Length: 161
Image (cartoon, rainbow, N blue to C red; front, side, top):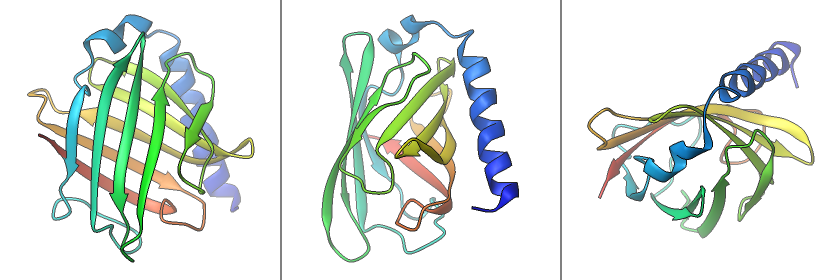
């Protein structure tokens, strides 16, 4: 991994954890993420080939949020990824993707979160999720260092269904 990329990823992670220390766990109960979101391929930007489709379903799970993503990649392979949004500043398991195995989420405010993804304990991706003020659009901006479909930089634009 290049030194500049490592520095950038580490810096974003530290910033996210610092800001997250201020956020409260109660944000999850009123999260605008709750519901089903469909990826708008025309508005999204990818470093590599775009997927054929992606649908994310966010559901309340106690104080946390469970995000289940149903995806069909560029080759037509389907996958289900489960991400737990637990806002405690610690990595939690991510299931269904080989590029990373754990994710940390930090709430900035009711519509914004910062995330970091890890593979075998190493930081491999950082990004932000922002829900528009009207609650109809979710934009995920991320940079990853892996070699799979989540590598490079991308902007994902989801629309609430």
